[in-house]
Image (cartoon, rainbow, N blue to C red; front, side, top):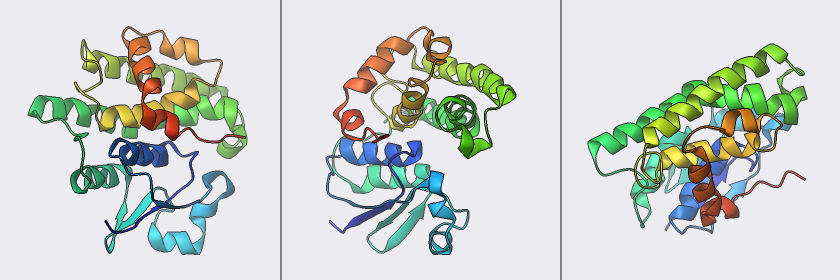
Length: 211
């Protein structure tokens, strides 16, 4: 297989999602180019050539450059051998796509930008903002509640393990480090799902070094 080059630092939840996809597919040998968002690395002219909006992750593979986590994850799922992380049935694919879309549109900003940033890296978002934290708690809980409602009695959000789970888990990890975790985690079905996610080898092997 052609070399895989991944641009982005391990502290990014979206970079971790891609690394979890790779791990689930059994790929451990990649070239990762560290770009620290907190230090402004993605805004350098060099990276703006890779991604016009200065975001991570960016993936280079087989002569192609791919931007945006959803495109990267779906591409890797198709080109790499192993069990698919995209459900086989239309209804389960819709479950997955709903949660991925909700996380992108509402969940990341609420849970990372509103809650996690307040406690863990406030300087990155302009200081502690109680209004942002309050909105983050309110909307973040809605996102987790809807994800668990979508999961229902299934072991994972869209039946079997899918991209939806790999999107949510890295975000939940940061929330789990904050005093607000109880307010967000006391949701029916969440504890069992979170236990399953933390037990995955792909989750353990992609734990970011926050030291």
